[in-house]
Length: 165
Image (cartoon, rainbow, N blue to C red; front, side, top):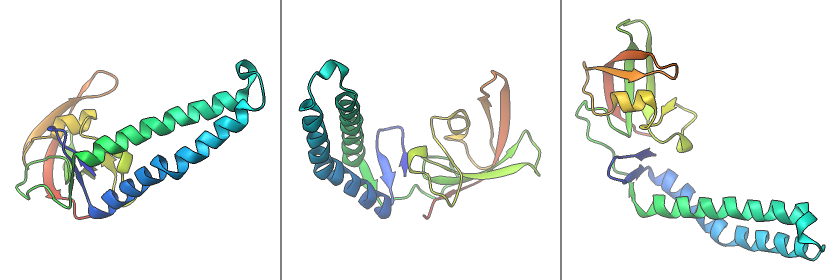
């Protein structure tokens, strides 16, 4: 899965189906389960000192946040559409870079949302420092980005190909 700048999310069909199933579960059976937990905790008495009640309410809040996130994500999803194979780095691309001009120090990663990272390939968010630096660059371009310690680093884009899943 990837995020693009115009709030559209590209998803493989498998990722879309998985997220839709999660949303259906959280919107249905999971809501019923948490409501039962809250009701059972209420019946225990004083809510101010009821750890089970507070834990269930916190769980409910997290669950509802996830429902809102999934709903928005799926509303703006483009399923099965991959970015063009034009050598421009953008979300949905597998990118190979060389660090600081050293052609032997390379890494390959998927530029995509880390939440849906695959175990098959390392994933960098388009909002990460490296992701922001390389996004929009072409093969052969040098990109600079700021490291967490405040120093600048540069990488050369060696390859950018659409992710095939």
